[in-house]
Length: 283
Ligand SMILES: C[S@@+](CC[C@H](N)C(=O)[O-])C[C@H]1O[C@@H](n2cnc3c(N)ncnc32)[C@H](O)[C@@H]1O
Image 1 (spheres, rainbow, N blue to C red):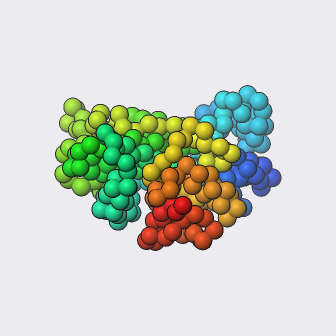
Image 2 (cartoon, rainbow, N blue to C red):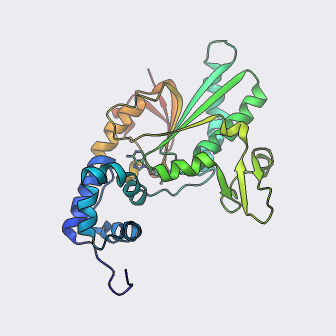
Image 3 (spheres, rainbow, N blue to C red):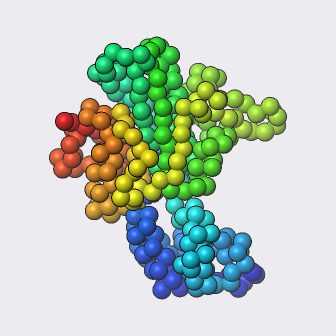
């Protein structure tokens, strides 16, 4: 495909794709996103040797395309920005307030088990940040065990999370003491990479899950749910439905952490607001 004859995404094809993204993934696709979708799918056209977006749509919506192309399509149209210890104040709250309160309220058993869900976990920075905090807490308090579930709709990001290999730039926000303990440098020193240590990786289970699903069958009852920076892509109605489903997997007294711009009208839900973007389930 020559640079001069690059195909363009006609509005009718964009609307077809946009309606599909909206219905299946919940993500809003206003007309202003046409350029973004066009540029993100260009690589797919080139890989598949397809010469127009019209032809790409025909393939995607065919039964073969739904089976073979859909995961690639989803990988292209989702936005996966994330960081270790993103919104770091929430991790301080987690360590200082949420974990002590949850553990204090648990029946005496050996060990006390905490379940944490990172819904829309992207490339793993969030579940592994959680794993570091939980691991430190478990070490100090003794008698505590934990497991973390990370879910996302994109197979690309889940593959990165599964490998758990990150660049030195990515791990900048990780406090030095935690880096030394939980990040392994590549044996080849010329490589600018680190890997999450096996004792943390073994605590994190990763799973593909579309938050638009009517049920989250693979998800158990959680003590803590992080669902951050994904609701912003959904419309209000969708946000409400997803929130109801998320809350049905949160134990009473459990904590819900949202993204910095995702404030919930909590009176409509069994939640009390603890701090901006941090809620506790009542009942
Ligand atoms: C901006 S990232 C947020 C990552 C992380 N929670 C954070 O705050 O750093 C949003 C993630 O939501 C995922 N996502 C988008 N729509 C989804 C859906 N319907 N179900 C599950 N995950 C979805 C995307 O694949 C992406 O990885």
